[in-house]
Image (cartoon, rainbow, N blue to C red; front, side, top):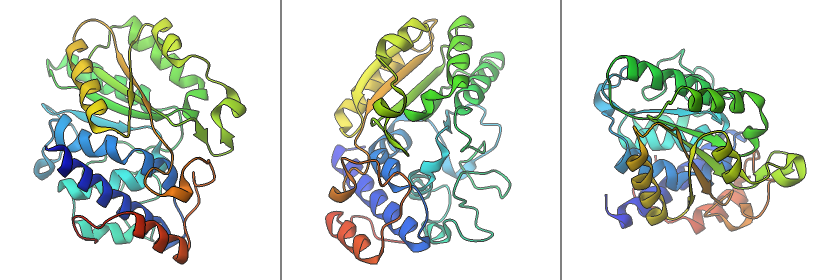
Length: 280
């Protein structure tokens, strides 16, 4: 997809995000806004998926697992804009009996969602299991994941990382949203992660560093990652982003990790984000 089209789609996704969380005064806009570019290119250029024929088994298509499930608004918007379900359904976000719960769930059969997530630290383990299943089935498609940097403070992540390297799970591309902020403050202040590049390499992974708010950087990182698939090592993208990207008063702070804008703040955000594809 042309970069300009990706930019327009990402901007519309950001509009969806702030409108969704504002409508119910609940949700996580900060990380969702920061990851809008990643999701946009992943679903519209990188992954081999068919939104018209979604199945839970995911045979012969790429799979994606969102481990940091609290940023569900960006995933829901991306799935809807990619054709998995009607865009108008975004208006039901976090409402009673909605398929679009605060954290992704599978009980109501929302197309595009294969695993419930939100209990942090578990997504990499699930994705490794799916990647192993693809190997056993001689399915050469790729499994993708996304994790928050604060989530890496969970021990299960590193157990899974050791397992993937030891068993040469080389059909997985994990991504860390490295925005440096979590719900209680800066990651460095809460529990420092040290040198993530060297740490993942020490655990036996191939690492790629990139700017997650730049489409060319994203495109080049995925190209490099694809060249490493099947070479015996799992792959992780260390993706620098800005929490709250696109809305100036949400950037540079952790305070919008899980806070919804009021009506005045919503108007301010929408004035900064041009309507490009039409609101739901």
